[in-house]
Length: 377
Image (tube, rainbow, N blue to C red; front, side, top):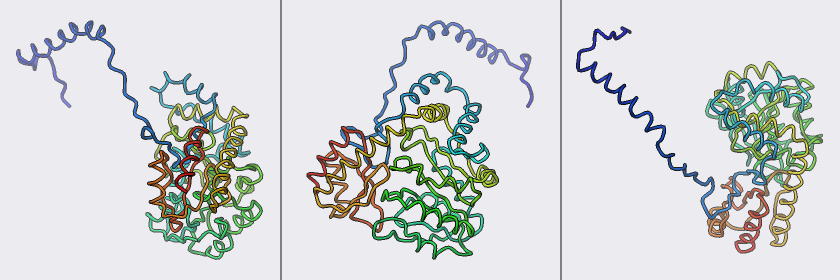
């Protein structure tokens, strides 16, 4: 590009240019003394007057240490967070008993579901998953040409591992297990899931989504991350969105073999935010937070189950941060009636179209939900 020299400006252009510069110098003091702009109006995340219990957020709140860490770093949000990521990865690897090379970070675990889905569907084939269940990875693989093999849940609304095992074959590209399952909240017995995953992983990757497992009564006895340490073709995903109460910060991770991790990273496009990284690391350092949050979630589950039992409603045995129960009416009608009472509940989960999922909120939110259920049921 040709550089514009002063001699190439005509008189009018020169006067316009210099006039603008002088005007800028004249205005600068006035700009500096101008009144502060009006405060930004922050819109509510949930419509005013409604209780949001449809998204499985942990409205009991994040760790005080995480909140303090975010506040301490507010003035650094002009910076990229790349230098902070390795220390978080190291802390996660220590928690999971693996090397940092086993850890892949994501913008929530959703990005990891998308990335692994892209990797596993490089060749057309089948993805095996429970119905109803969480759909993000299944949908990602279907978009890339894979066939979804949906396996109905058993009578207890748990994964039917025997039926799923019968579907695994040469065309299988991935087996997806959400444990506890979303939307039912049911947990697969650890010994059965371990045996299933080892056998299925000989044929194709087994992706075990443990987004809600830290809400369960026995996390340590049910996590399958040991299968990764033992070298099986298994991926285990977690998120800071659920029990850690950081849904708005979008931080997730997965544990997998280092060679798989390298391949998955090529399919990721997001970048975690600085406040999310420091909040996640502070959350891990607050060792008393998760047991306390787990106890509060369980208390909320138990109180909601008591309402449902009093109303004679069938429900799935919950181990996540939500309860799935039979409403006795079409879900669309139930949603509308609950909203009229001030509560937003979850979407439909075909084929169980008279069942509803309600998240466990804070005590004030649950009081509204209980009152609404007393009327609507």
